[in-house]
Length: 146
Image (tube, rainbow, N blue to C red):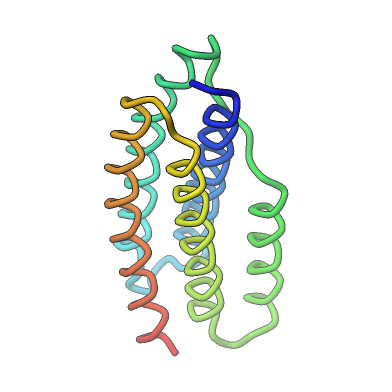
């Protein structure tokens, strides 16, 4: 794994951690809204992606990535504040989660661009397909919640 490849995959892992945390919090905040199953599916997809990527990073670096991004924390805080102010909490969270989906795809594409190792390319292609489906589902939820 080249240093650019390693860096891009680690950045993606951080965004995946952001997603697990944000979706987990949103699931609690939106309890009883009917979105719980969809939110859990998004958590599961990210956890599966992490299970695929973490061993590849560990093999190359001797450690896994456990960090998160500042941007992810700020988006979550922003959603929490907006949800407290606005009357439609579901709509706020769904909109912010859809932005997280956009960001996740950007990081996957960056990692794919930097990927040189066959095992990394294979993992990223699989993850891209799975998380593209998450993105499309969240976009659909956003449109229906509007």
